[in-house]
Length: 191
Image 1 (cartoon, rainbow, N blue to C red):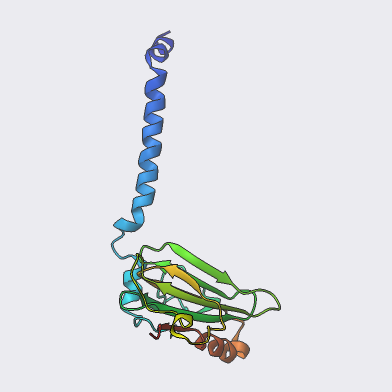
Image 2: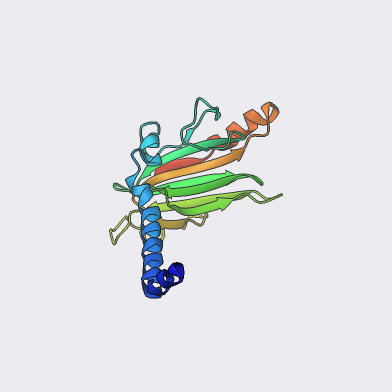
């Protein structure tokens, strides 16, 4: 009988309020975790990557990983970009399945991704522009020049990392994979 009396005293609203409070606390802690990390991924890459220049990374091994949990069966080219002085143009050829290009903010948020398709080469051309209403220069058309032939996707971002990923198909294809990764560019836009 004592257990039944105790259960009758427990207020259902108090139990629901405690469950809702616990859920809110869990969500807030999950969303805050990247900002409270002692060594976020961007700070690890900032020391190893030049600004606005693509760098071919060495093969991933257990002892040499620029970021945790990178796949050892892939090769990477990375660029740390900064659009504070001028827009940055990113180009990459993605010749097939398994190839990808991704743009990340300093907080690790993925703001753009492109993948290679089977039997079709995909060319990604991205213009990273500073956030806000800042004038970044005249377009070629407004200066009386011929329009650029390639279409560029403009993304508002201040700083971050661009990662081009290629499948590692073994030693026989290593030279070809590295040559394709070397064609990826990351450079300030010419004014």
